[in-house]
Length: 328
Image 1 (tube, rainbow, N blue to C red):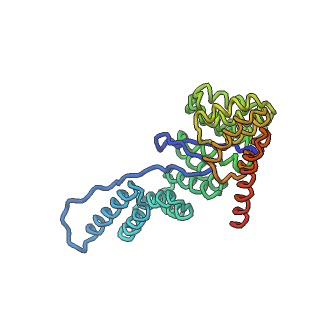
Image 2 (image 1 turned 180 degrees about the horizontal axis):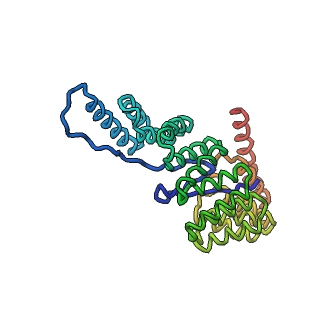
Image 3 (image 1 turned 60 degrees about the vertical axis):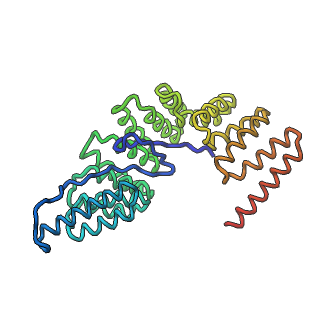
Protein backbone atom coordinates (compact mmCIF):
# COMPACT_ATOMS: atom_id res chain seq x y z
CA UNK A 1 0.00 0.00 0.00
CA UNK A 2 1.39 3.38 -0.99
CA UNK A 3 2.11 5.70 1.88
CA UNK A 4 1.61 9.33 0.98
CA UNK A 5 3.60 11.56 3.26
CA UNK A 6 2.27 14.88 4.48
CA UNK A 7 4.54 17.60 5.73
CA UNK A 8 3.56 20.95 7.06
CA UNK A 9 5.28 24.09 8.22
CA UNK A 10 4.57 26.03 11.37
CA UNK A 11 5.55 29.58 10.54
CA UNK A 12 5.24 30.65 14.15
CA UNK A 13 8.30 28.49 14.79
CA UNK A 14 10.70 30.00 12.27
CA UNK A 15 9.75 27.71 9.42
CA UNK A 16 10.29 24.44 11.23
CA UNK A 17 9.16 21.52 9.06
CA UNK A 18 6.94 19.02 10.84
CA UNK A 19 5.85 15.46 9.72
CA UNK A 20 2.21 15.01 10.26
CA UNK A 21 2.31 11.30 10.02
CA UNK A 22 4.38 11.31 13.15
CA UNK A 23 3.02 14.47 14.41
CA UNK A 24 5.08 16.72 16.70
CA UNK A 25 3.81 20.26 16.46
CA UNK A 26 5.76 23.35 17.13
CA UNK A 27 3.78 25.61 19.42
CA UNK A 28 4.16 29.35 19.71
CA UNK A 29 6.41 30.48 22.51
CA UNK A 30 5.42 33.07 25.08
CA UNK A 31 7.59 35.32 27.22
CA UNK A 32 6.95 36.83 30.60
CA UNK A 33 4.74 39.89 30.37
CA UNK A 34 5.21 41.25 33.87
CA UNK A 35 8.47 42.66 35.12
CA UNK A 36 10.12 41.94 38.41
CA UNK A 37 8.95 44.35 41.08
CA UNK A 38 11.57 46.44 42.87
CA UNK A 39 9.21 47.65 45.59
CA UNK A 40 9.86 46.40 49.12
CA UNK A 41 6.73 44.91 50.65
CA UNK A 42 5.79 43.12 53.78
CA UNK A 43 6.22 39.36 53.75
CA UNK A 44 2.51 38.48 53.59
CA UNK A 45 1.24 41.36 51.48
CA UNK A 46 -0.72 40.66 48.26
CA UNK A 47 2.00 42.44 46.28
CA UNK A 48 4.64 40.09 47.66
CA UNK A 49 2.51 37.11 46.60
CA UNK A 50 2.30 38.49 43.07
CA UNK A 51 6.06 39.03 42.97
CA UNK A 52 6.67 35.49 44.13
CA UNK A 53 4.14 34.13 41.61
CA UNK A 54 5.88 36.03 38.85
CA UNK A 55 9.28 34.65 39.87
CA UNK A 56 7.92 31.09 39.80
CA UNK A 57 6.38 31.76 36.40
CA UNK A 58 9.69 33.05 35.04
CA UNK A 59 11.48 30.01 36.44
CA UNK A 60 8.99 27.88 34.56
CA UNK A 61 9.83 29.72 31.34
CA UNK A 62 13.54 29.11 31.92
CA UNK A 63 12.97 25.39 32.53
CA UNK A 64 10.90 25.13 29.35
CA UNK A 65 13.60 26.94 27.39
CA UNK A 66 15.96 24.02 28.07
CA UNK A 67 13.35 21.31 27.51
CA UNK A 68 12.77 20.62 31.22
CA UNK A 69 9.01 20.44 30.82
CA UNK A 70 8.18 18.56 34.03
CA UNK A 71 9.99 21.18 36.07
CA UNK A 72 8.39 23.96 34.04
CA UNK A 73 4.89 22.58 34.60
CA UNK A 74 5.54 22.32 38.34
CA UNK A 75 6.59 25.97 38.51
CA UNK A 76 3.60 27.13 36.45
CA UNK A 77 1.28 25.26 38.84
CA UNK A 78 2.91 26.86 41.88
CA UNK A 79 2.63 30.27 40.25
CA UNK A 80 -1.05 29.74 39.51
CA UNK A 81 -1.80 28.89 43.16
CA UNK A 82 -0.73 32.44 44.03
CA UNK A 83 -2.00 34.11 40.85
CA UNK A 84 -4.83 32.00 39.31
CA UNK A 85 -5.65 34.59 36.64
CA UNK A 86 -2.25 34.49 34.94
CA UNK A 87 -3.33 33.36 31.46
CA UNK A 88 0.28 33.30 30.28
CA UNK A 89 1.06 30.64 32.88
CA UNK A 90 -1.85 28.50 31.66
CA UNK A 91 -0.80 29.05 28.06
CA UNK A 92 2.80 28.03 28.64
CA UNK A 93 1.74 25.11 30.80
CA UNK A 94 -0.39 23.89 27.89
CA UNK A 95 2.57 24.24 25.54
CA UNK A 96 4.76 22.26 27.94
CA UNK A 97 2.18 19.47 28.17
CA UNK A 98 1.94 19.40 24.38
CA UNK A 99 5.71 19.11 24.06
CA UNK A 100 5.55 16.15 26.47
CA UNK A 101 2.97 14.44 24.25
CA UNK A 102 0.10 14.96 26.70
CA UNK A 103 -2.58 16.62 24.51
CA UNK A 104 -5.47 16.16 26.97
CA UNK A 105 -3.60 18.07 29.69
CA UNK A 106 -2.59 20.69 27.12
CA UNK A 107 -6.19 21.18 26.02
CA UNK A 108 -7.33 21.57 29.64
CA UNK A 109 -4.78 24.34 30.16
CA UNK A 110 -5.63 26.06 26.87
CA UNK A 111 -9.32 26.06 27.78
CA UNK A 112 -8.43 28.02 30.93
CA UNK A 113 -6.88 30.68 28.71
CA UNK A 114 -9.85 30.82 26.35
CA UNK A 115 -12.28 31.15 29.28
CA UNK A 116 -10.47 34.34 30.23
CA UNK A 117 -9.36 35.52 26.77
CA UNK A 118 -11.79 34.12 24.16
CA UNK A 119 -10.11 36.05 21.32
CA UNK A 120 -6.60 34.66 21.95
CA UNK A 121 -5.94 33.27 18.46
CA UNK A 122 -2.59 31.71 19.41
CA UNK A 123 -4.30 29.59 22.03
CA UNK A 124 -7.07 28.52 19.65
CA UNK A 125 -4.34 27.43 17.23
CA UNK A 126 -2.36 25.59 19.90
CA UNK A 127 -5.50 23.85 21.10
CA UNK A 128 -6.28 22.83 17.52
CA UNK A 129 -2.79 21.37 17.20
CA UNK A 130 -3.31 19.44 20.46
CA UNK A 131 -6.61 18.04 19.19
CA UNK A 132 -4.84 17.15 15.94
CA UNK A 133 -2.15 15.28 17.88
CA UNK A 134 -4.73 13.10 19.63
CA UNK A 135 -6.59 12.41 16.38
CA UNK A 136 -9.66 14.49 17.26
CA UNK A 137 -9.75 16.10 13.83
CA UNK A 138 -13.30 17.49 14.01
CA UNK A 139 -12.42 19.45 17.15
CA UNK A 140 -9.12 20.49 15.59
CA UNK A 141 -11.05 21.86 12.63
CA UNK A 142 -13.26 23.92 14.98
CA UNK A 143 -10.20 25.41 16.69
CA UNK A 144 -8.38 26.24 13.45
CA UNK A 145 -11.53 27.82 12.02
CA UNK A 146 -11.80 29.98 15.13
CA UNK A 147 -8.13 30.96 14.78
CA UNK A 148 -8.69 32.13 11.21
CA UNK A 149 -11.93 33.87 12.14
CA UNK A 150 -10.06 35.98 14.71
CA UNK A 151 -6.91 36.40 12.61
CA UNK A 152 -7.49 35.67 8.90
CA UNK A 153 -3.78 35.94 8.06
CA UNK A 154 -2.72 33.20 10.53
CA UNK A 155 -0.86 31.09 7.94
CA UNK A 156 -0.07 28.01 10.02
CA UNK A 157 -3.74 27.44 10.76
CA UNK A 158 -4.50 27.05 7.05
CA UNK A 159 -1.93 24.27 6.71
CA UNK A 160 -3.25 22.23 9.62
CA UNK A 161 -6.89 23.00 8.85
CA UNK A 162 -6.45 21.73 5.30
CA UNK A 163 -4.79 18.54 6.46
CA UNK A 164 -7.41 18.01 9.19
CA UNK A 165 -10.13 18.29 6.53
CA UNK A 166 -8.28 15.65 4.49
CA UNK A 167 -8.03 13.38 7.53
CA UNK A 168 -11.83 13.30 7.85
CA UNK A 169 -12.36 12.84 4.11
CA UNK A 170 -13.47 16.40 3.32
CA UNK A 171 -11.14 16.69 0.36
CA UNK A 172 -12.87 19.59 -1.41
CA UNK A 173 -12.69 21.66 1.77
CA UNK A 174 -9.03 20.66 2.16
CA UNK A 175 -8.23 21.75 -1.40
CA UNK A 176 -9.95 25.09 -0.88
CA UNK A 177 -8.07 25.83 2.33
CA UNK A 178 -4.67 24.73 1.01
CA UNK A 179 -5.14 26.88 -2.08
CA UNK A 180 -5.84 29.79 0.26
CA UNK A 181 -2.54 29.02 2.01
CA UNK A 182 -0.77 29.19 -1.36
CA UNK A 183 -2.18 32.67 -1.91
CA UNK A 184 -0.23 33.87 1.15
CA UNK A 185 3.09 32.38 -0.06
CA UNK A 186 3.04 31.38 -3.76
CA UNK A 187 6.69 30.31 -3.64
CA UNK A 188 6.47 27.76 -0.84
CA UNK A 189 7.08 24.31 -2.32
CA UNK A 190 5.54 22.48 0.60
CA UNK A 191 2.14 24.09 0.01
CA UNK A 192 1.95 22.60 -3.48
CA UNK A 193 3.18 19.24 -2.22
CA UNK A 194 0.48 19.12 0.46
CA UNK A 195 -2.16 20.12 -2.07
CA UNK A 196 -0.93 17.34 -4.36
CA UNK A 197 -1.27 14.83 -1.54
CA UNK A 198 -4.90 15.81 -0.96
CA UNK A 199 -5.63 15.47 -4.67
CA UNK A 200 -4.03 12.03 -4.56
CA UNK A 201 -6.14 11.04 -1.54
CA UNK A 202 -9.18 12.24 -3.47
CA UNK A 203 -8.22 10.02 -6.42
CA UNK A 204 -7.35 12.95 -8.70
CA UNK A 205 -3.90 11.72 -9.71
CA UNK A 206 -3.53 14.07 -12.69
CA UNK A 207 -4.08 17.13 -10.51
CA UNK A 208 -1.84 15.64 -7.83
CA UNK A 209 1.02 15.16 -10.26
CA UNK A 210 0.68 18.76 -11.48
CA UNK A 211 0.99 20.08 -7.92
CA UNK A 212 4.02 17.89 -7.15
CA UNK A 213 5.73 19.21 -10.28
CA UNK A 214 4.97 22.79 -9.21
CA UNK A 215 6.68 22.03 -5.91
CA UNK A 216 9.76 20.77 -7.78
CA UNK A 217 9.85 23.90 -9.93
CA UNK A 218 10.36 25.86 -6.71
CA UNK A 219 12.56 23.31 -4.95
CA UNK A 220 14.04 20.56 -7.19
CA UNK A 221 15.15 18.67 -4.07
CA UNK A 222 11.79 18.63 -2.31
CA UNK A 223 11.83 15.12 -0.88
CA UNK A 224 8.10 14.55 -0.55
CA UNK A 225 7.29 15.78 -4.04
CA UNK A 226 9.97 13.51 -5.50
CA UNK A 227 8.78 10.54 -3.48
CA UNK A 228 5.11 11.07 -4.28
CA UNK A 229 5.80 11.37 -8.02
CA UNK A 230 7.65 8.06 -7.73
CA UNK A 231 4.59 6.54 -6.02
CA UNK A 232 2.29 7.77 -8.79
CA UNK A 233 4.68 6.36 -11.40
CA UNK A 234 4.66 3.05 -9.54
CA UNK A 235 0.87 3.10 -9.50
CA UNK A 236 0.67 3.52 -13.29
CA UNK A 237 3.34 0.89 -13.96
CA UNK A 238 5.93 3.35 -15.26
CA UNK A 239 8.91 1.49 -13.80
CA UNK A 240 11.65 3.62 -15.36
CA UNK A 241 10.16 6.88 -14.10
CA UNK A 242 9.52 5.35 -10.69
CA UNK A 243 13.18 4.31 -10.45
CA UNK A 244 14.26 7.78 -11.56
CA UNK A 245 12.25 9.55 -8.87
CA UNK A 246 13.02 7.05 -6.11
CA UNK A 247 16.70 7.57 -6.89
CA UNK A 248 16.28 11.33 -6.74
CA UNK A 249 14.47 10.92 -3.41
CA UNK A 250 17.27 8.89 -1.81
CA UNK A 251 19.87 11.30 -3.19
CA UNK A 252 18.14 13.95 -1.08
CA UNK A 253 17.69 11.62 1.91
CA UNK A 254 19.54 8.31 1.88
CA UNK A 255 17.68 7.32 5.07
CA UNK A 256 14.27 7.32 3.38
CA UNK A 257 13.73 3.59 3.89
CA UNK A 258 10.39 3.52 2.06
CA UNK A 259 11.96 4.98 -1.08
CA UNK A 260 14.95 2.62 -0.83
CA UNK A 261 12.67 -0.39 -0.41
CA UNK A 262 10.42 0.54 -3.33
CA UNK A 263 13.49 1.28 -5.41
CA UNK A 264 14.69 -2.26 -4.75
CA UNK A 265 11.30 -3.68 -5.72
CA UNK A 266 11.44 -1.87 -9.05
CA UNK A 267 14.99 -3.00 -9.72
CA UNK A 268 13.76 -6.57 -9.22
CA UNK A 269 11.18 -5.96 -11.97
CA UNK A 270 13.99 -4.78 -14.25
CA UNK A 271 16.12 -7.82 -13.24
CA UNK A 272 18.81 -5.47 -11.94
CA UNK A 273 19.49 -7.69 -8.96
CA UNK A 274 22.72 -6.10 -7.70
CA UNK A 275 21.05 -2.68 -7.64
CA UNK A 276 18.06 -4.23 -5.88
CA UNK A 277 20.23 -5.82 -3.19
CA UNK A 278 22.04 -2.53 -2.55
CA UNK A 279 18.75 -0.67 -2.22
CA UNK A 280 17.25 -3.33 0.09
CA UNK A 281 20.35 -3.41 2.31
CA UNK A 282 20.29 0.37 2.67
CA UNK A 283 16.57 0.22 3.46
CA UNK A 284 16.99 -2.36 6.21
CA UNK A 285 19.76 -0.32 7.83
CA UNK A 286 17.35 2.63 8.05
CA UNK A 287 14.38 0.52 9.12
CA UNK A 288 15.37 -2.82 10.72
CA UNK A 289 11.75 -3.42 11.71
CA UNK A 290 10.77 -4.11 8.08
CA UNK A 291 11.67 -7.81 8.16
CA UNK A 292 10.12 -8.39 4.72
CA UNK A 293 13.28 -6.87 3.30
CA UNK A 294 15.28 -9.96 4.31
CA UNK A 295 12.96 -12.12 2.22
CA UNK A 296 13.32 -9.72 -0.72
CA UNK A 297 17.12 -9.81 -0.50
CA UNK A 298 16.93 -13.60 -0.44
CA UNK A 299 14.80 -13.59 -3.58
CA UNK A 300 17.26 -11.26 -5.32
CA UNK A 301 20.19 -13.56 -4.51
CA UNK A 302 18.14 -16.58 -5.60
CA UNK A 303 17.42 -14.90 -8.96
CA UNK A 304 21.18 -14.35 -9.33
CA UNK A 305 21.75 -18.07 -8.80
CA UNK A 306 23.47 -17.51 -5.44
CA UNK A 307 21.62 -20.16 -3.43
CA UNK A 308 23.86 -20.06 -0.35
CA UNK A 309 23.50 -16.30 0.12
CA UNK A 310 19.78 -16.56 -0.58
CA UNK A 311 19.30 -19.26 2.05
CA UNK A 312 21.12 -17.11 4.62
CA UNK A 313 18.64 -14.27 4.15
CA UNK A 314 15.63 -16.62 4.06
CA UNK A 315 16.79 -18.08 7.38
CA UNK A 316 17.22 -14.59 8.81
CA UNK A 317 13.72 -13.71 7.61
CA UNK A 318 12.23 -16.79 9.33
CA UNK A 319 14.12 -16.03 12.52
CA UNK A 320 12.96 -12.41 12.63
CA UNK A 321 9.37 -13.44 11.78
CA UNK A 322 9.40 -15.92 14.67
CA UNK A 323 10.62 -13.23 17.07
CA UNK A 324 7.89 -10.87 15.93
CA UNK A 325 5.18 -13.48 16.45
CA UNK A 326 6.46 -14.30 19.95
CA UNK A 327 6.55 -10.60 20.84
CA UNK A 328 2.87 -10.32 19.96
